[in-house]
Image 1 (cartoon, one colour):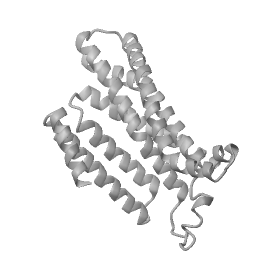
Image 2 (image 1 turned 90 degrees about the horizontal axis):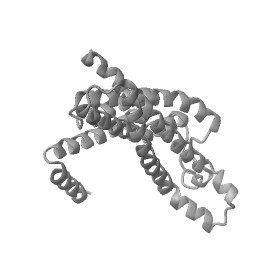
Image 3 (image 1 turned 90 degrees about the vertical axis):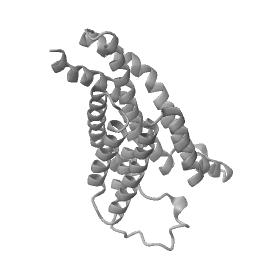
Image 4 (image 1 turned 45 degrees about the vertical axis):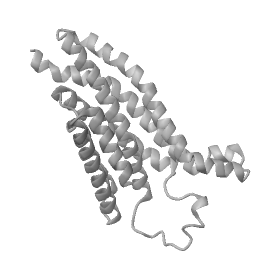
Amino acid sequence: MMLLTGILLILLVLVCGWQGLTIFFSLGLNFVVIILALVLVAGGFEPLIVSGILSLILLATSIFMNTKQPLKAKTAFVTSLIVVVVLLLIIVPLSQIAATYGFGAEDAEEIEGFGLAIGLSFQKISIMMIILGSLGAIAETSIAVASGLVEILEYDAQMGPKQLFKAGIAIGEKIIATAFNTLFFSFFGSFLSLTMWFIQLGYPISKIVNHKILIGEGLALLIGVIGVIATVPLTSWLLNYFRKPKDE
């Protein structure tokens, strides 16, 4: 682990220069924050409140520490926050209806000797996991769109709001496919070993597709994709909004 961490640091410095140290520090800080959040939730703190605070910190460190251009950073940060709040409003009732939180039947043997009355809401923990899983893709998409629009403004500062918005959508169209693939591969990889096990045990396809764990991962994937898609037009609109006072 230490060897891989050292290789990561060296590659960051070689590729990004001294900015690589900032990126590495932000990664380390995010790791510490996530561990602290897990300790707080395990200690009885409200998971949704911890998720909100954690999202603020992770977005702030990921965006402002690694993005020097103020307009780009401000737009990406505000966009990500708005999208996360909207997704939270969707996830809470959807999680209640789907009831995919908690353990599956396959976990019965492993947890047989443990008590489940641990004072934690598995539904809220599931919501927390979905939000954290979507956060990176949303922030990445927003930064990419905002960066492209800022580059355009550097060449044509007088571009109108409609043209700039259309340019943002055009940039976003190329990013959405990549972001979707990233989320899909993550989903497929996390479920691959369990799928292989089901196939070896002769589970019918209908049972695999309707399995609790697969449905839960599928919901997380769809929520992430919805967040990425919503990020593109919102980033384009907010960047137009934030640049108005300066132009006027």
